[in-house]
Length: 158
Image (cartoon, rainbow, N blue to C red; front, side, top):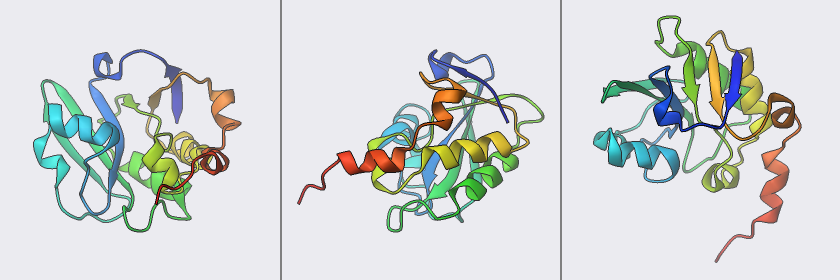
């Protein structure tokens, strides 16, 4: 469940646990996952294939990073995004602590892969995991945001 949205630097969160999207193929060389791979978890950039709906975790510098396997480079986000995201968040080994999360489904590559942020957010909200989302939007704004419609604004470069 989403307990809070905030605008601060997620790396300075008091929760010390951060969740973010990673690919099923295990190639994570873009977006927030790439940043985490470069700064904290080098193996993440080419960690190998994992099943959709699973969580891979790694501790570095006192922060536990949770990679949520929720989409595919080849096939994009699945039709059941809400269910996959809820399953991922429910599987985070957080010991009952609040987990911080980046807004999954809002980066260009994720939007291009068919992410529907409202469904993703709903999956987070329906999970048992207490989560704070690091975004500039309120819960109400998020529930009225449809990143899939925003995809139409981007043109494919040939």
